[in-house]
Image (cartoon, rainbow, N blue to C red; front, side):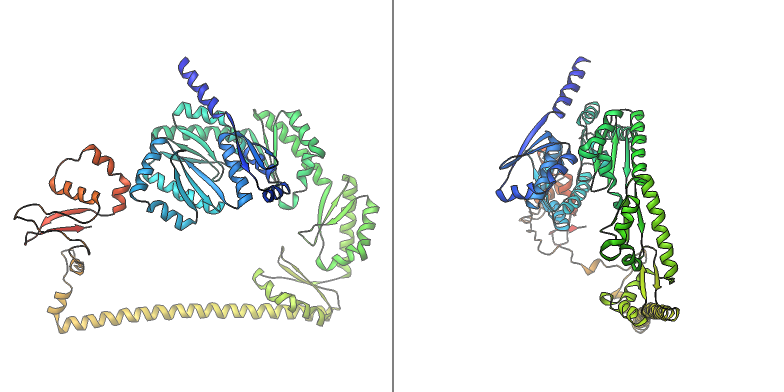
Length: 567
């Protein structure tokens, strides 16, 4: 028991040992990385400490985390990403031997994914480099290759990236390794935990423990996901100088991580009660923030009147209700109103009242439209819709969110005329679409009829030929016992390029002098019936035999010549 405990502590100590690595920088790279927030983002993703020096970057943390951080930083600096697939020592040796005999395995994956692949025997891993998307594709293909060579020795457990921090904790993963004998590591590229071992039973046991840990981590984590346009909530959660988030963490004894790119917040703690308490507090902050910040959609044609000349109308409403009103950049018809809860509520009521009055004074005709016809109504560069507006003296609003077209302003006759033109455009495009569909269907029918006619004609010709010369037809197409056509004589009995020397004396064994050394040894072993020695067994890996895709047999021919048949 003492030895076992000592071993556990030793493995965990090694797994949690902090290491450091350095990336040398050129002056150009230093300026590039200084002007971005990449160091902060990578440090948050990988749980590492990263320091930018005058001519280098120093990364400190757990070994695998440091390696991931270095790959991400190098991708930013030189545009090339490097991923890894770790192997056991014996697995690495087998892969090395297999590649020495047949390197086409990696060559095929490289060709199909566009990533460079190399085996690093010194580190017992496969290194994949290239664009990150290509690296991911290559790693998926490599996992298939490894699963073929080592069935059940490589298994994975999917993990959402919001759980990377808790699932990537090296101490629990090391504990699972000690209990099962399998190696366990987090792969951020593929969003999974990779489990590997020479013993498939050990791998299966480790997967079970990893899944149990994942279920536990999910209970000890609460994830808040927001819509893209709600990204303004994150700064409120963080607070000025991080004051708000620090207070939440201190009061609830938890950890809170924000992911700006995904507009996500993750709360984690060592007990479900603490997570729940932090979740309630965070929900209260978000609810209050939403009361103090609202979004109102204004029709496109109403925006000039709502904004006012030089923004005068918006400024007037902002001053009157003590709020801030601003237009959302990425959503031109969306306006954000912020301020104290009561002031925002009053401003919202006033804006909706103004909008109702505006709509009453700008009665419009509205129709629903399929999204595929909107480009036809707009025309090239908006030319069609501008022409209709100019002719009718009306304003036309297209709402892509609700798929509606509204004609406003002008008198009733002009609005109706403009709407009729829009409807005629849509009807014309519908008719054209129907014609295209009918033409395609007719073309398919014609192709099928031509194929059927060709088959019928061929069958008739064969029937006439059989009736006129049955003996010749039987000779050209003899049938096997099963009724299938015998095609054995369509191929040569000996592969092209294969030569076998005739025996020097009658009854002696033929000597094969072509092909690889391994092929000749396999042939001699098969025809002699001798047992192979251990050295030969080591040479014939399963991957080598499978890659040949051939089975060789020997038989005697009438002229005393040995013939090889491939199947």
